[in-house]
Image (cartoon, rainbow, N blue to C red; front, side, top):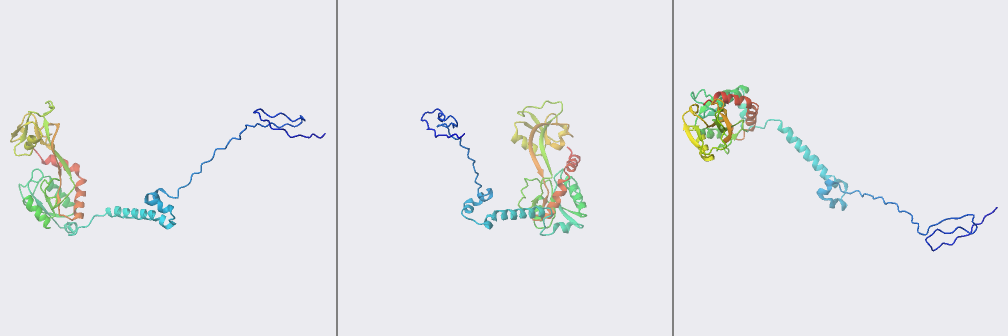
Length: 307
């Protein structure tokens, strides 16, 4: 049997269209049916400029810069890395001495200027100096298989001789605050010491030193420091062992004097040794020797320096 479907007129209403008059085939359409829109995929445009090229001028790259020019920054980075590596590798070797001091001293004689400054340098016998720094110098000379020639003099005269190449080292309790920085090469500090205020163990630590009697050894810097930095009453004594109560002294003497620190620090000193200017290999060799012996140096100071 043959069924013929006739066209169906579109209704103007919002309802569904009526079925065909034949009743055999019907198609339902909605006037307001809207086909859902698929979400658009955002396409991320890849920048023609890398972060590096943006920093060195992305405008040039986007304006038609060719490949070799775009690679210039990378080339510069490679060159910089190579130079940095060369510097690091060169730092593994000792620098050079214009006057070859290290080579000259090794296996021969080291000329050392000494000026008295107890306990750093003690000159009871100028031909055989004692103290912390002469002991260090002897050990340093032994490491180089060298003998030591001692030359006594004032600090000013010795620094002048060092500057003229007549000495290899100068010792005498020098610190980083030395006025000779422009005339001599000073080592890095090999030891730091402090002037402190201490009290006997059974004494209550005062909250401040206002009007507190504090003893100091006559002729030491502690008296001037107390007057400038505190409101204490400085009391000069010939020997701190005879003092009673609080006292201002060097930190390495507190145990011998049976004092405990109060937390009041009057000064700090960074101790150094002077070498000739420009003799860098010599200076570095000395610094390496000193900086690996800090514990040993502290123990030496405590044995040598007595109240």
